[in-house]
Image (cartoon, rainbow, N blue to C red):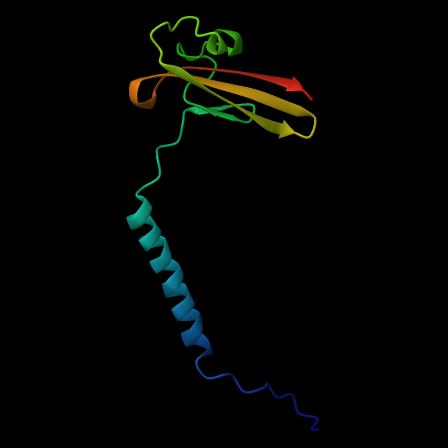
Length: 114
């Protein structure tokens, strides 16, 4: 052993390997975008942990009970209801009413302590 402060020799191709991995990463993202297309535009916002098309304050936000009972939208073809956890002690129920081709018409939600 010597008392000099020497660095171990660099591996050959170290920077090249990083460049290759970086290129694969960028190429992988480009490939994914080409295969799966662009992501859908973000929805208007959230209520609790729900990602709703129409948030409170919008004329198309009708609340949980109206949404789940189809009130205000007799021509809607269906509803999509899901649940999520906002925190360990709070859950939310989320609802969207839609007409043909999943054209969202109204949103509603409620959050409650679990």
